[in-house]
Amino acid sequence: MTLKDFIPVFSGLIVVIIGSLIQFILVSRQLKASALIHISANRQEWINSLRNTISEFLAIANWLDANPYDKEKDDSQRQENIQKAYRFFSKIELHLNPNEADHTQLVLLNSEVMTLLKSPNYDSDKLYALFTAILDQSKKILKDEWERVKQLY
Image (cartoon, rainbow, N blue to C red; front, side, top):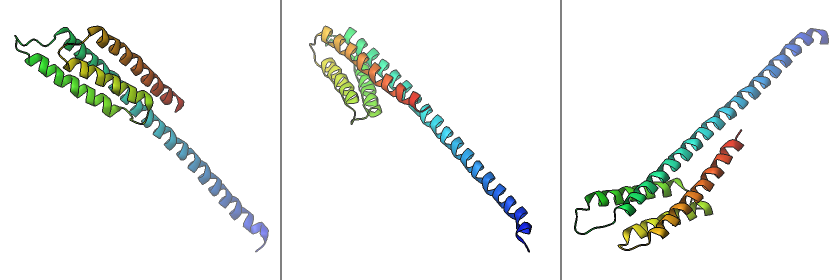
């Protein structure tokens, strides 16, 4: 057997190796793209959930401000909404990363709202200033996260 006899075998082997390599590269790219789509979908879900939870928290806090404690009447609705506010407060805190300063600041602002709403006499102007600060801080966090989602592509 001469070298000429092995050329078709080597040619075939090289074609198989190159084809397999190209297939591997294409599958790797597809897997990476699929993972990025999954990650961005999860982040978008997180953004939507946090946005909805913050808006619910502020809506209930606003209702509690408009319906202050009155020992002369039944306050069962108020107590129920205080529990809802705590639930949303906790949900917001669980959405956030305690290692990020912006996130910690939002938790502190929400905590101040809860402290004010529990006290019998508080300044509504201070409460509304906190609402504004919460909205501003939330917008910053949501925008930063949206920028992270966009960077995935």
